[in-house]
Length: 274
Image (cartoon, rainbow, N blue to C red; front, side, top):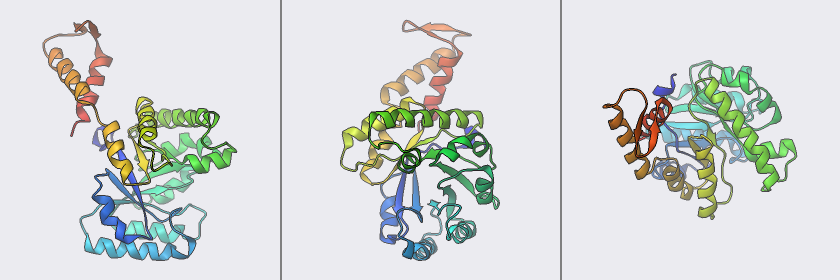
């Protein structure tokens, strides 16, 4: 899949597979993607029930398109989760948690499903080159909480953030090299902190990320706004694009030199407008 064929994902909202009454409510939030979670949000004794819940919901909503975070490659429910996703066209893509190798990813994509590898460990970071080049990878994302545990970081500290920024760089680099969609930022774990969420999302945007994972409906509107071009940015991009029609090569506009990279930036902003 080419970058030009990929839709943007500003917000991807998790909903527990054990809470089917929340599936439709999640869609109503306006999130770009809904992720039904079979993994961390579902206790071990309810894993099978989560699949039954989603199957029943998809039968009632046959045109719905969702993502599913299945259980990890080494989990007893992995195969059953994957078989479920392959059997349902309503499952648009699969999120593979704790992805650590190309082989794991390609077992998920063997039947044509797209995958978002969720990088959550040192092994996952080490294997990013191969993971990003695997068949049917759409975009990369990461899980800061699990990765912090694996690396022995102190969660919530400035020092941990510096390490995670290196992970973000790796995701951005390998997404670009593999011609993937822009990576998706990890979750912001504090639900009732809209100001902190804005800063967190804004930083990810400035780093080149296309959107973020959300764990609560209240986070969706903030993510959608932050990862969308502003009115001023759109107006600037349209002005640059119009001026380019009348000027060949580099030209000056409002005191700024407009050359090929600036024009490409303007076109990227306009492509992001619905």
